[in-house]
Length: 522
Image 1 (cartoon, one colour):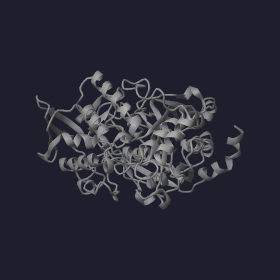
Image 2 (cartoon, rainbow, N blue to C red):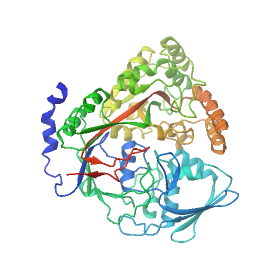
Image 3 (tube, one colour):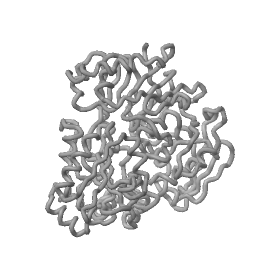
Image 4 (cartoon, rainbow, N blue to C red):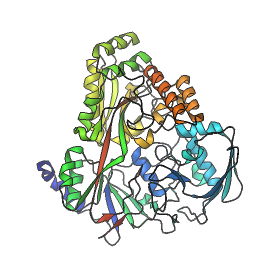
């Protein structure tokens, strides 16, 4: 509490900002980080995904039970051989510029998404043709059956297959879009966007919600709020103070040290996102030394351990779990196979592997995002890796800078990187097809660019598997292969917390965060 009170002066800066709209129903939120990258297909960063859910919509969506439901789609027909799907869009869907949403827009959007997303890339291999039959109807014909077409189009997290106008969706997938026109419940105010300060969205008064009640990411997405303002406050204590004083309404990513304080505070609702367990992940860059050598990557398995990271990031064991599995413990695909003897902080074993790799002691660049809940994870990695013989150059930067920098393929000493630490929520790591970090298709993969035909073969097998036992067997084979290839290292799972004021109502807790259905009493 003492630390909170000390930062009251900073709160006043937020409270007295002259540009805050007073006449409208405005919800002010401090999100997990500032927003600087606006293309949710170009990057899978969660903050960009949140931005995407405000302004874009999806063809299908997962409800609160995890079942696939039509969203922009009114109906679809599936042939008896499960090779042909005909989709009809809901009538009256409009882009924010007033143009009608068409089938050609959706086909172009699916193509761009499938060029970037690991699940989309696998689905593209199954798709023979996509054709527009009319303005509202299009057909997808498959080369062979897959049970992942509808669930792929309903993918809830990075990268979400958001629909965009054709002229925007035809942007080179490797380049960021420059126009932000969606058909979702809110409109992005590019003229009010000030990176490092504020991001603004306003209600799309021509949005056509579904008639069903909201459920997860499905159902009616009614924009009750006139404005949503994201305020860039990097100091978490300042954000919490602002929430306690009623100057903001919502905080995403409450530090676990302050959960009890908020639980005891009148006027505040604190919620644990139990449907959204998170996993800390270390990503080596496979392009450059020393991690272009598998022995150096395998050394990571032995240098690190999960508990040190979880203690540093979360602290309270009530909100974390050691989990030696690539998939969230407690789910059907979780398994310790292949990982039983790893993540033990066996420095001697790690040193031996590093010596076998021919590591010459050159500094490895470890990026540290200073404005997220992960801020304490890189120092833990640095300490453990140095015990194992790595020479670690830890470089501090804000999260959006890290997101942009990790796309750079240049060597670490020329502005590139060696290791990146981040956290993925459960929606992003549900299975081997969804998990972007597991995509080992070289340049088509996520930053870090692992290359391994063995993992890709197993992911193909998973795409064709139809029963849970089949899928579990494939996942175990992937984990055994992963201990050799090391696309990434899972460093334990944790629950995130958010908080809002009691005059805010209607927050829908799902696999991702949306601002529809929320009402606020002024």
